[in-house]
Structure formats: C-alpha cells, structure tokens
Image 1 (cartoon, rainbow, N blue to C red):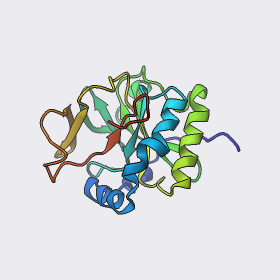
Image 2 (spheres, rainbow, N blue to C red; image 1 turned 90 degrees about the horizontal axis):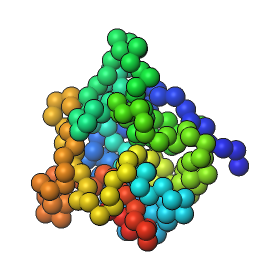
Image 3 (cartoon, helix red, strand yellow; image 1 turned 90 degrees about the vertical axis):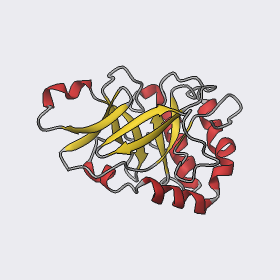
Length: 197
C-alpha cells in the first residue's frame, strides 16, 4: 500500500466537523468505545508512540471563518487569522489530524513549533496502520489523531470548555465523566497494555 499523504490544512476539513455533542452521540451509537483499548490502543503501543499521540473524537469548538485556523497557546486555543499573521506561520504546528480518502489533514494547531508531526517519516507506518484500522472499523469519520506531548499516562488528564471563540483546557480535577451529563470524553491516551485513559 502507498504511504499515507500528509495533506495541507483546508478550512473545509475543520468546518465539516460536528459539534461535540453530535460527535458524542454518534460515538455512543457505535458501541466501539468498549473496544478502543484492544482494537486501537495496541497500535499506539506497537509503534511506541503512546506518549506522543492519542486518539481524538473529531469535533469542532465553534464556527470559524475560511481565513482562520484554531491555534493553541498554552491552555487556550483561539482563531488565528492566517492572512494577517503570515510572517508567524512558521511557528504554527499541527496537533490534531483527521483521516480523509486522500490522506491525513491537520485541523487544530499549536504555537509550539517543537512538536512531533505525523508528516515526520518515522511515523509513516504508525499513521498508516492507525488509519487503516479506523477505516476497517468504520470509525474513521469519528476518530482522528492528536498530539499528547510527553504527558504522563497516569496523570488526571485534561478537560476542555469553550467560551465564545476560545477553547480552554484545564486539569481534569473539576468534572466527573460518570456523573456530569455535560462532560464528554473526547481524547484517549493509551498505556502499556493498551488501556485508555
């Protein structure tokens, strides 16, 4: 099989994502969540990328204009006008990607230019196997790939909330996914036995 192509950002790839509640409802209807660790998590472990990448529920946080991209600075992500900030674009690095029929496309970014990218050739086999597995399970329109940095698999994780046109990430000490009906699990990092956190 040919190597999966890393495609450039396109506004339509962000704009076509569902909002978080629609994405959560679509995920719940599949029942796949119970097999994530065994069917998907083992791929992360196999390639040793469990501390670099995770799985994300594809969703968008708010509407954006065609000339904007979502860029995170620290724990806050905001629209970045690519037309007025062209000189600074070299600092922007993709952190979330979705699979398409043509390849893998970034849809969220970071101001941290030091992150690992799926376009790095050392990740080709992992990115391709993950994409094939998601397609075979028919969940490639539900899940994408996200950068988790060097986060500790044992940490409490993070939660996000959107306020206007800003998305804020905070430590997962404030919500309980089991008791808070408004909380949606939207990203998974896999441990050494493929367990999801």
